[in-house]
Image 1: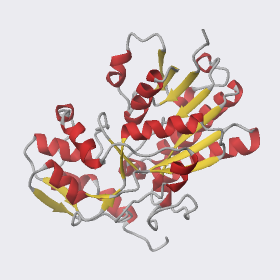
Image 2: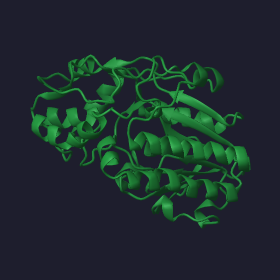
Image 3: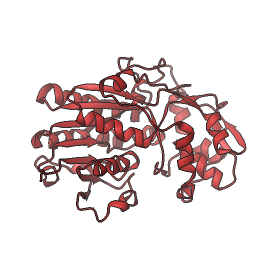
Image 4: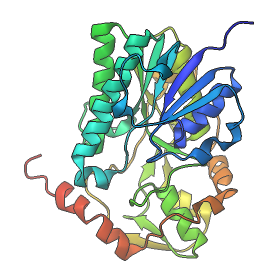
Length: 335
């Protein structure tokens, strides 16, 4: 019997990472997860706890060293691990630079010494800043906050390792992923976690601005299939935008969830619309989104009890949590 190919998935206990692990195991791969469990949760992988094809190492990627055992015999690496959220990145930029840049370098070095066949980096569309839409891969780069900068610099490191060391790298710039297991942290952030807890608590939805802003939401299982396609392709050194190519307004999300609305101030540095031009990934990787937005929201609502322990955000607490955002991003005199 032919040995199953081995994949390392960093951040594999996280939101997107765990769904990618599901897919890889179903597709006949052996998977080794590296996760610090700061953002990830062991519970995201509980359905595989007795699967001999899955092993997990709970550690910080910054502590990785070349020739570490977990990379022995590995053919592919998918690198999701990192720290997210906008406001904390403004307050603690050094953590983001250390984890998302130097941590990525540690993973790259492990992959280089293991002589892997493919390294796929999970980049962020936030690198484009306030972008023209639909946004192509050759759009100007204009990060608006440290998180965006750190993810872009991590991507540049990955592509540099491809250029200098011939490490076979592809990078996928994720737009707005959503779906079951989406994380809820103590930080104010992703709209789904905020709205679902508000719905459970019979509180009005806190809509930023007038709610006409739209996001290119892509369901998480479609994200996972895109990363697998980027692993399997013979193409290397490529950057792909990843979205549904079909932006949805926050007002439409509110309609699907059903409930009262209260409006909070629009934040500086946030785009009115995110909209991925996905022609490159659909053409070159023969990938396409499969889950309609309404179906994805329905799947999440079926598991709404998962957000019972999420923080409840209301206008006053949102204003306090985002004050740093306004203090720094509202001042563009030197931009």
